[in-house]
Amino acid sequence: MPHRRTGSHLATLGLLASVVATGCAACDKRDSTPAVSAPATPPVEAPDKMVELPRGRVTLHGENLSRTFEVEIAATEQTRHRGLMFRKSLAEGTGMIFLMPGDGAWSFYMRNTYVPLDMIFVDRARKVACVVEDARPLTEESRGCGTESSRYVVEVNAMTARTLGLKKGARVEFNEAVITVERTTPGLGAPP
Image (cartoon, rainbow, N blue to C red; front, side):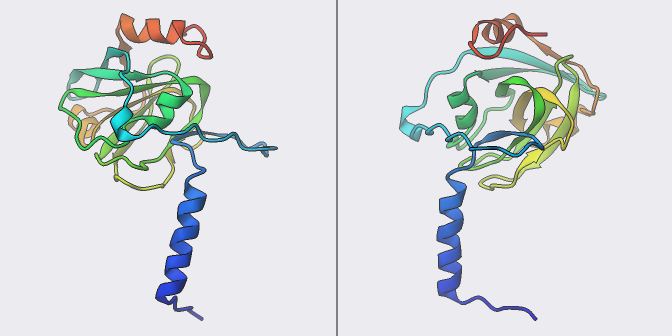
């Protein structure tokens, strides 16, 4: 039998959901082993205290065409959790690359992210593992490649992957700036 919720029940559930959601991370490695204790989510800086990130270039080679993007490089735990949060727009031809601390089945959400994005999960061989198209802004839904392993995630404006004809196995290139940040950031190790 369906249960009808009253306004006060919905408000209580909304408050509970927001309290639970604050413990989530922007990116998360899926693992089937039970966790003994979940690590605390690093604090996300206020929008007025955004940190300047290193920049590089990523080239995506789709079936239709190839395109190079100027990207910000999120290489630390704090910058990966922050991602593109609080941005009201993303200029055409720009994006962000997330350098993950290893290979894994990573997932992302769109908390405090106002721009619809394509998320391109890239494996250690720099081939597209999967594409999440048109991720809806301001949602907590976990998005990823299921059990498919990736080491990098590139976020660009929504519909870019479709325009390029980007599919699993497509080639992805990083310029020397991205490789240098990966090589020199503690906890990431040498690039493959």
